[in-house]
Image (tube, rainbow, N blue to C red; front, top):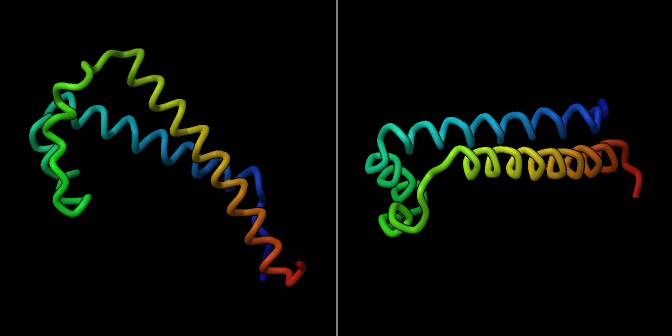
Amino acid sequence: MSKFSILSVGIALGVTLALMSMLCALAFAIWPGATLDFFGAFMHGLDFNAVRLAAQMSPGRVLYGIVGLGVVGLVAGVVYASIYNVVATGRR
């Protein structure tokens, strides 16, 4: 089995999650009701209608979420690739 580049996997996952966060923010800005309905179905019927009233979208909040999710993705990707490389090479 080949090894993963730890930093490459981390960056790829971080960028992917940041892009997903941007698309989610855009969908919520354009279709708030449909977006909440979709995520309610995605989360097995949870009611997200209270989210609509909890906090207003602002560019700062959106950017905070994008950057935060990107960092979480980077860390998760680094951890995942590190564990994969240990398992793939049989080292313990």
